[in-house]
Image (cartoon, rainbow, N blue to C red; front, side):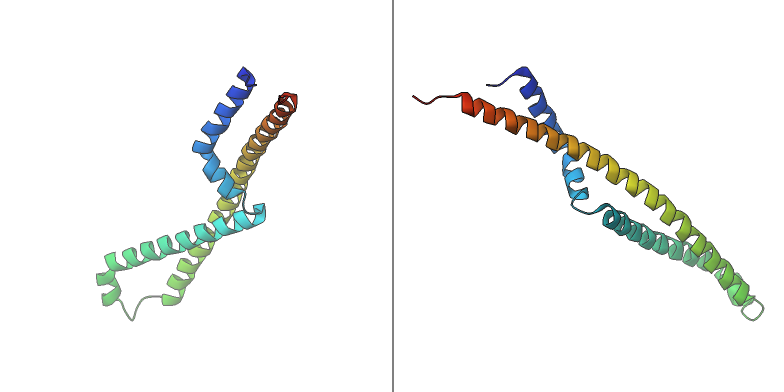
Length: 136
């Protein structure tokens, strides 16, 4: 027998499945550490490409000066600065990714737990309704 409470729960579940449910169920397929590490690696790869692009654009912008000063430039200090900034960016983005994706995983896990509680509640009540029906 359907009650208002069951209908509300089913509506919430259907709404969740259409919205964040797909993402949440894909997130919790992973262990938390694996999910966070995978997304940290993705973030660090994106940071690397973005940094290389910026360094390349700056080099292209200053190509005239670089060509004129080919023998006078302090290449060692330039490389140290570029590497230092790159390492600093990697550390900052790794920390940000760690915090953001751990938080995202925890929120998704909490929503999925609630979803499974609703499923368990509906299954339990469905079975009790089935037991109450007598076939004649």
